Image 1 (tube, rainbow, N blue to C red):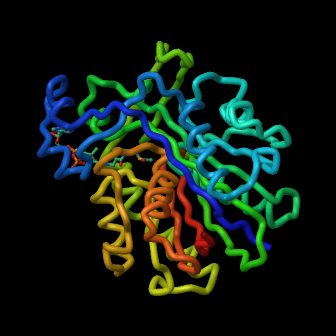
Image 2 (cartoon, rainbow, N blue to C red):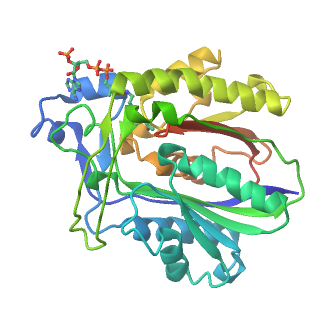
Length: 320
Ligand code: ACO
């Protein structure tokens, strides 16, 4: 028995903030941001909340899977930017969707959040405890970005993505995941409080040693991919798509190079959305799915990395 993704969804805010607009309030330029990160624009939440985006993405995933909300056994929402401390985002999503039977909880592993939620869902399915699990990654990072810090404010964006995972007959792939708390100071946000009405009360901001995070990612992502391939007796050539957390184009390119794999197998959409943390993998997955690029039976690797520090990868077979 394994968990197969049977539906995906995504929701991003309407408001587009492009690089030239950022250059109006910090000392930067469209060219610098494109060259160093690949980002051209990002979405910024106005009316949208972490809950509303997660619920909309979740609704789409459930609809595509062709199940009813009452069939969902569990909802896991990966987020580092909940609208409130509690009730958790996943319970709010449950309420919005009418998923009355679901057990709901949030998971905060920053940019690794969706990957770890995926791995957790697989474990619940492998144990026979659950059959249908909705996982969402949803972030409103614009609320914790320091808009005066050009080193970080250019990177991030808001949005949500979701996947509905169902128990099916099939191969259970082993996951790979790691954390290193001793490296945590490279990327921090010490405290945060928000309100759902958009009037966020921010008590601290994202602080990052960009170079250190860059080096961490470039080293750990290929390592995680190799580890998960080894665990499952697979080679890089067996993989059709490498769906990496969308932090920086240079990180994705460096990973492809280290893995000696063509860059065309590493899809990217960070140009449009920036780094949406836990939402980046499911937003990209949804885009690939809805545009028909993913074919049934293809093998994918999902790889996440981020604050903690934390990182990991999973292999999956596309089932839609
Ligand atoms: N515009 C213009 N100049 C800038 C900007 C900017 N937005 N930001 C920094 N600079 C300047 C710096 O002040 C520095 O100037 P100096 O040489 O006079 O001191 C110069 O550009 C070079 O700065 P670096 O920090 O060395 O630039 P780098 O090439 O490393 O790029 C960046 C910075 C884009 C942040 C890069 O380090 C990076 O992408 N790191 C990874 C960070 C990341 O992906 N974080 C996401 C969070 S991780 C995750 O998703 C979990």
